[in-house]
Image (cartoon, rainbow, N blue to C red):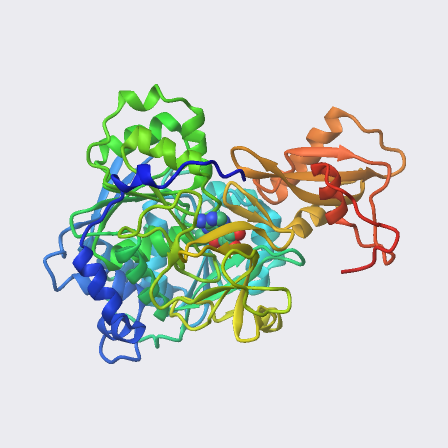
Length: 581
Ligand code: PRX
């Protein structure tokens, strides 16, 4: 990513500087334990995310405040107060416990469109003490199967359309006992299908939330690595302490805000900041069911009177691409604060935001594993365009060399964090060895390369591994390669991320064909469709290049590094001694 020469001066006039006193007080008195005690419920050891997010407001004047305003793709609006979400999630918890026999610690997964039921069901599952596993609704059957099999999910909440997509994998999941359908569209269903609507209508709306310890497992989010299948990052109920605090002080949420997080509930941003962060602060959030559309998004910002907006660099670059005329047709008077996460936010996008909305996008950095924002251009700081910002209080990042020694400012190295904040993942599900391998010399190694400047701002450089970041979705090259070689024509496959001006990287596959197959455009499309159907459209190679054979190490491992160097026109180095990494 090229950083331009824009200075931060032009941003100072627009940097939002609310509640400076509050911020200073927060800094002086910062203590995770104190916040944890404030959010805990009948003693300081017990926290339940759903209680903090919803039920804690019932004794306050927020009881009948709107918690969720949802707009369907067709423009239908539904509103839910904190009280309504509490009652509905109680019903769902009763369905799980009384009808489906779900017990504390069982895994309940969600493969559902962005509809109100996903929020209700997630809250109900947390109240029941079970562990939630949200899945992106654009996943194909292989992606869903890997995650359900690894987590040994007992219950899956889905819809008739999505069930159809994964029907063939269901018999291959021995731990999966129940599949429940949310049937908004009133699609034809089998007589023995469990229906959300029916089960909810019979359930009581009072439920005693399970008294979860703050260290009890609450959430599994799967994330892709360089090798192997996706790994389930496990978070505990105490993580809400991080969601609450960062939503308050980084996203700057206040009681009267109307907040819009554009992330899908299937990803970590969609839970930490599309549910728990805003609701634990008692804030109204608006949700649009559909995906990206410049026209629709501008209209939604205006129509919903959004005040705080949390989005992602790819979306911002797509808005930029749709031109500067379109936003002139809308009014963004209510919008006071904008944040971005998931990929590097190029300074040009910050400048563009200022031109269109009159304020800068505030970039921040975190990961599935960190559970909450770690580094941010938060409100009382001057936005430093192109930088991820400074560490949040209680967070200690550093830059390490490859022997895990700390580097001084100005030096690029491995971004690492001192472990110990509440929303940090506690393990990779059934994969503790890999979890342990992420810690070196007392630091958590994030897998990103970055540097720190003399003023304490952190700058993202690149990933340290082969993971591809396409439109904010992490794609593991191994997962794509594994699916590619299942295509009947593919002999070998190597997958890399190719830089792209809009989505940061696209998936590019190098493929050698089996004997008897001829390369053609038609075959390329067929292979792309094959991956899209099995994994997801993000994982499907945007480009495929046929090669007679792929470069390999002595032991036969495909050299992605070499493929990438070739693609970028970088020196290939001495390849004669290439061996396994
Ligand atoms: O490489 C970094 C990139 O996204 C990764 C985390 O992705 P994921 O686990 O899917 O978490 C999503 C929640 C944010 C990071 O390791 N990344 C995230 N934020 C930024 C970023 N890269 C540059 N700048 C950022 N602000």
